[in-house]
Length: 164
Figure 1 (cartoon, rainbow, N blue to C red):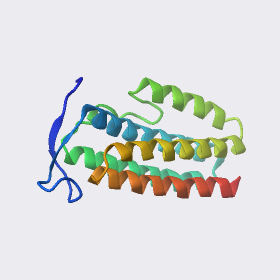
Figure 2 (figure 1 turned 120 degrees about the vertical axis):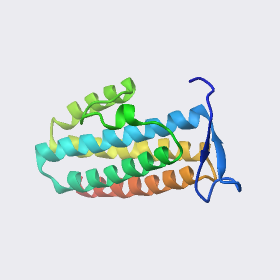
Figure 3 (figure 1 turned 180 degrees about the horizontal axis):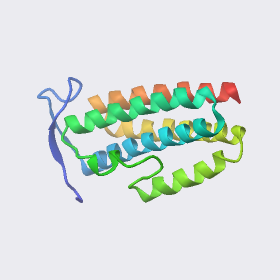
C-alpha cells in the first residue's frame, strides 16, 4: 500500500530499541531483491541444464543462499513474501523481472559464451542495484545483508569473467 510502513523487530545493527520503521519503498525494494535473486538462480539453473557447466550449478547454489537470506529477513520483520517465493522456476510476479528473465534466457540459450555473458551482466547489475538498496537502509541489519550479497556478486562476476 502506498505510504505504508511497518514496525518490526530487527537485528542488533538497527536502532537502539531494536525496532525500526521501514518505509514502503524499503519493503518494495526488499521484495524486488528477493525475486531478483530467484531470477539469477533460475537462469543459472537453466544454463546448467543446457550446458552442464559447473560454474552455473555452483553460482546457482550461492544465489539460492542469497534468496534464503533475504526471505528469512523478510519473514523475521513480518513482510509477507509467500505470494511469489513459491513461484516455479522462470515465473515471476514482477512483470519487469519476468521480461528480464525471458530476454536473458533467450540470450543465454544461443551459446555457452552468451550464457556466461548473461551471468556477467546479471552480476554487474546486481552490484550497482544492491549497493543503492544498501545505501537506502544504512546502519541496519538489512544493509549488512545487502553488503554480503554485493560481496557474493563480485565473486560470481570474477568467476564468470575467469571462464570467459
